[in-house]
Structures are given as C-alpha cells and as structure tokens.
Length: 420
Image (cartoon, rainbow, N blue to C red):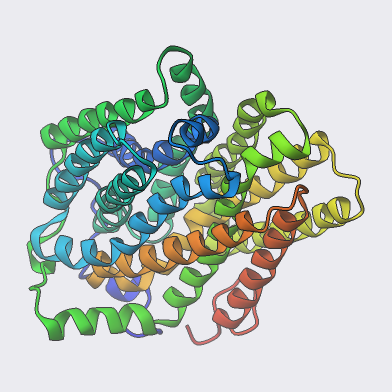
C-alpha cells in the first residue's frame, strides 16, 4: 500500500464482516478488552506493591523500583516486532493462545522469584508473552472491521480495558491485605489462564486465508517497508508514542508523588481510579461520536485540549501552587483527552495497511511501547520531590504530538492531508 491508498480503495478486497461464526459482537468486544486488560493488570496492580516488593527484595532506592514497571514494558514493546509476521503466517488464534499461556506461566515464575534480578527477568518474559495480545487483537479487529467501525470497536474495547486501571490499584491493595506481594502475581497467572480457556473455546480464526503471508525475508522486509513509509501510519504511530510516553511517565511517578509530594499515599488508589476513570469515560463518548464526527475531528481536538491542560498544569506546578486537588483535576482532564486520542490515532495508523495488518501492528506496537516506555522512564527518573518534571514531560509530549500531526496532515487539522 502507498501513502495515498485509503480504506475505500481496499474495501473490495478487505471485507469488514465482523466476527466470524460462533461469537457475537458483544462477546467479541469483551474478549478483545479482556485480552488487552492483561497488560493493564500487570502494570497497575503493581503500583501499591512497589514499596513492599522493594523492601522484601532489598531495594531501597525508590527510583530503582520503577524498573518493576519498565522491565515489563520493555519486554512488552520489544517482542511485538515478531508477533505480527508470525500471526500473518500462522493466524491470530494460535499466537494469542501461545502468548496467554506464556503470560500465566511467567506470572507464576514472578510469584516465586527469589531475588530482584530474577523478578525483573520474569517481568520481561511476562511482557514478551502478553505482547501477543497487543499486536494480534488489533490485527484481529482490523480483520473484521474497517474505518470508523474499527474506531468504534476499538473505543468500546478501550472503555472496558480502561476500567481496569480504575480498579487495579485497589485490587492490588485488597490482595495485599490478605497475601504478600507474591499473591498479585498468582492472581495474574489465574486471570491469564481464565482468558486463555475462554479464547480457546470461543474464538475462531479471523485471518482470511488469502491474507496469510509466508515468512520469507523479502516478504517480511517489504511488509516492514510499507509499515515504515506510509505517511499516515508513521505519523499517527509517532504521535501515539509521544502521548503514551506521558502516560508511562505518570505511572512511573504517581506513587512517589503521593508519598513524597502530598504525603498522602493512602489516597493514591482512589485518585488514580478517578483519573483512569476519565479515560474510560472518554472512550465511551468516543464510541458514540466518532462515526458521526470522524476520527480526525475528535482526536485532533482532544490533542489540543491535552496540550492546553498540561501547559496550565505546568504553570501551577512551576509556580509552587500544586495541591492534591490541582493535580487530580489537571490529570483527569489530560487523561480524558488521552482517551479521546488513542483509539482514533491507532485506527488511523492501521487504516492504510489492511493487507499487512499483523506486521503493521507489530511495528506500531514496538515503536509506541518501547519509545513510550523510554520517554516514561526518563520522566520518572527525573522525579525531584515535586510534580514539575512530570508536567514538563507531559507538555513536551503534547507539543511533539501536535507537531507530528501537523506534519502528517500537511499543516491541516481536523481534515485529511490534501491529496491523501
């Protein structure tokens, strides 16, 4: 596909037929969300446990504990590059089952880890395994839906998926009232097994036989070339990377912010839930409006809102006027805008690449997650006892995202680039 190919050009060849026999629309969306939630659970249930894990394994440097999050994200991001070509060759279902089985196994290994380095190893492997759900679910949705319908399905799945961060820190805290931190990993293993069994029983193969691609060097290289040279796809992939980096910076910093800045660590799960809830609300609203307004109008407007909010927040923090209320309100607004952007950016990045959906999802997942993890790690490591480094990181991410969108769309917002 070239940069000028649109979904309408592909429509005769790529049929947006919905899920296959044996599974309805609601179950399909629920299954996609459940798979995507495996990643969110592996990150957000850890947040209240970081101090206990560090203390148990002899890690007293608070910034070093951020590796528990970053190790998972790096494994999750780097391995995505392989799942696309494999799912294009062997099908979506097979790769999903392998990944979810590995997630349950490596979660068990993390629960039994005797040292911090071993825990980090299993966290990397856990990320490697669950990366299949990030790549293959997006490819699976693209197999079944196109254009604004795809954006709607992704928004509905994101709505359920984003409910997980609302509850995950509280779930982690509740589990730790009964069990030590190792119980969190046992819970992740059990959840992975449940979703594995559901998928094995109910999900048919979604990849049309005509779209299976052999694993040949020339074929793979050509698919990667297309994924990395299609203007619209590359632009929205890089925009997702910038905004995702801000999110990971928030996740890396939030425990220390509530403990060291506000001296209110017990309020973290509730306020985190409220902030994450705004992302879920935004995804629900997006699912209702995107087919009427279009992905560009919604996501470009939300990106401007994200940047404006973070510039105001930076002014508050830099001026020394930050409070729990100002932090919660500004982050809630920013995450609401985030929720309106990501599903749409993802759909627009995938739209021109239907024939190589698996490889495209791999490339985009790799760049978005690894780049975002590194940006987020940089933001987290700059923590200095204030919220200023985090707000600077958010503002820079918003500026970078806006610049990339303007370049992608030829200086236009809210409408496709002329000639696209």
